[in-house]
Length: 426
Length: 115
Ligand SMILES: Cc1cc2nc3c(=O)[nH]c(=O)nc-3n(C[C@H](O)[C@H](O)[C@H](O)COP(=O)(O)OP(=O)(O)OC[C@H]3O[C@@H](n4cnc5c(N)ncnc54)[C@H](O)[C@@H]3O)c2cc1C
Image (tube, rainbow over all chains, first blue to last red; front, side, top):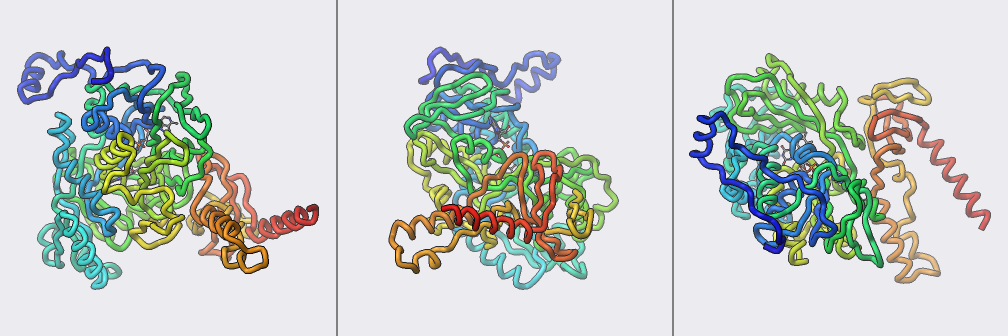
């Protein structure tokens, strides 16, 4: 380990340990990561302790043996989108720049808990996209084939197939009847907080410093080279600086004089009161934005569209609440009997083509990861893996080489929905 | 959010469609327009391409005060420039986009005149 002076203090979780602690009053559990003060200099500084930043640190340490690394988080680990999302994972994309990346992510999810020795509650309960017209069925055939070509699984269902899974949907809805669906059985949900904690523990136990309440307020840039960051805890030097701040991307990168192909928008999420098990997978509406699953505690977890206007507020407005609930009623009338318990918002880094960036910048030593829109949770493992690869080797990972910042200049946009440079429509 | 329409008074934001940063009103001349002219050359074309790329794809994406375009689709179909705080959602000012565009044009003309 390059980070001398560090002693491994972590422990391994096991069934035996859980039983032992249960019998001895749970007094033997220890903090899962340290609370270090920042050193003067690191090999790599990662800005942002969200899922992607922590995953990057974990893979840098575990796959590339680079452990002289700090993750600087302005708030607390898991307080950003990684702890605010609706936890859906899937690899059902169309374009060749996207699909292999998301399938790598799915494979990493499948081995995550063994890799981290941490229960992230990865649950491959199936993601079903509903279709509401014959032409949408055709589009799903195409998407399904693209998924299968990348090595992922996809299954086309007719109306009867959907009815077998979820008999209570409104199949004969006058405006948007349900005609069938595209099912990815390996898709599902993951406990989002546990992803942040598991990666934090994985990185920390290999010597990465996770520094909370440490806000980056500027970059140290000399002769076109980035040599560190300014923070509320003082200047910290680094050979490489890797921004990974999701919804705050434009704010942070503007400190390096950069304008990004990104707008920040707010997305809301909703949870109902706890109910008996009714929805055992994830269902998405095909004629607009709405998706729903049921948490292990019984709450229906659902969400829909962005609020549509630029926002840095982690809360939305009422018209979208109404809209989301209306769509919910349209496909699943039974939802009308459930009470809404909570709702909240998170700030999305919506990119100009709806696809992300994992790239160098024009400033030497400064790297950028962002533009994850509202689909970045599922990407967490592959994003960390590919960002670590880029940082360690200075070459893009094979499955992430399309995620370049200059793709709008070169004409290599990755626009899954074909909407053009209108971030709130992706 | 309530948008105080200069002609119609306070209207619910859900009557409007949002487009984005009001910088979208300042479209640079596109490459074709630029390079026809006697001083056309590769450097000029590259510069025009760059400016057009920046105009279409890059945004300041301010946290705080933000001038933005809203379209009153379920109303009088006018375009508005709304000055709004993206952290608090507070709206400071609402103008007809037409007025803003005309004012910009006058400002540009008087700048050009000084040269
Ligand atoms: C309501 C909602 C539902 C969603 N549902 C899904 C879903 O079902 N499936 C899916 O795949 N995706 C979903 N997403 C998207 C997903 O959550 C995000 O794309 C992803 O979490 C972003 O990456 P992250 O985890 O690294 O971000 P974050 O957790 O936001 O991490 C960024 C971190 O950077 C920190 N930071 C910011 N500025 C600074 C600074 N100056 N200095 C230091 N630190 C800083 C922030 O505090 C934050 O902790 C959803 C998002 C929301 C809001």
